[in-house]
Length: 441
Ligand code: 5AD
Ligand code: SF4
Image 1: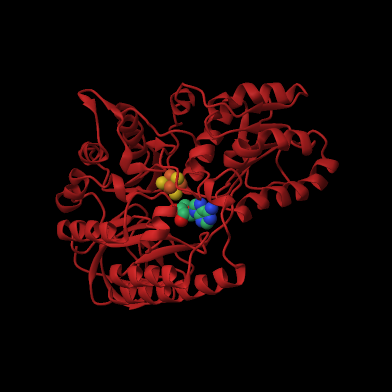
Image 2: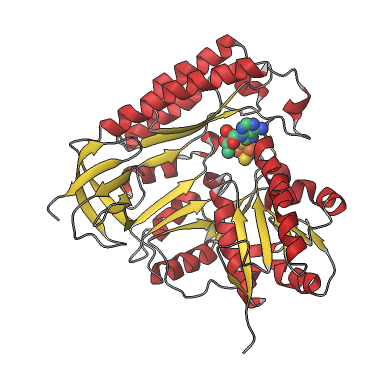
């Protein structure tokens, strides 16, 4: 029997990269590689990278620096760069980083096995095309191994929105949706392997328009069909754009019990002037009206968002408008970013905000959001939620899972098994999670 080679994948960035890393790992099994969680042990190291902000991109180069020593000790070690940095800077990586054997962009993963064969023969391999074929179709079917109760499933990739700060339309390419039957087949397979909750992923997931047997399906239609899959108990999706929040999807939040009451809906800024300069094609007011409609359909929905502070030309008054919008919404979660200049994007050429000022705004926004998150979390005390248990907690006998609202919930009693959904009464709100006791059913 031939010994298997070992593959170590390090994943940076968003959930789509997490999903892609899983699929790459599966595809590499065909090429004779088994996963390992130790870089030192590996025959191949693959960095699945993120290019969204400068800091994320820089991490790749410092990580490559660390691997120089490993490769000196183990000359046969192969090093690959995948993901959005590979897409954006692939040729430069090949030119400047002799220790890198393989560079593969996010739309070319199905070609990995061939690329690896080339690398194993001593050559270097670069592929950053945007091929017409669907990479997921060509990636091997997912093996039948059992898995945990939650999974990601990419249904849509790429973006045509061209926000002035964002590299995604360049690194992930134009918007493409996977055909509905493939998504359903993959979902059923995940459920057969123990998955109870699926999070549908896409850079603009609510722009989904995959081919179905009777014409293109919207995300709402896809959700409703997925809800008919026996054994699949929960459906989530992320990330959405306000302009693609259609009526049928809002309605699904009102009447589809398997669709969880949590919505990540980035707005980026509360200033109409800045939103316009960001090319967002919505206003603060239209965003607030949209949330009103969503809450009318599902009053308890927990809202989440993304914000950028220090976007070029942002004034204190613009920033105040962002604080006002946050106050008006009341977020259960929100992610805040300091604007990062991305080469090749329109905003990179514009007058930049003083970095100290941007830092100060970031801190003020984070303080407000932190308060809000805690208010929302604390308000769960005394309520009864359904928890999907995922794994044992740190304490003996403790189990941890997620509520419908995506709060982590700890329960100290014996009973709940991984993959079970149980009714829990929330008794305490901690720093980052809730504590509860099993109740009734
Ligand atoms: N600088 C800072 N944050 C950014 N994002 C995207 N591009 C940039 C950038 N250049 C943030 C947006 C987006 C999230 C995924 O990352 O808020 O919603
Ligand atoms: Fe980037 Fe805007 Fe597209 Fe989101 S909608 S991926 S922020 S360009």
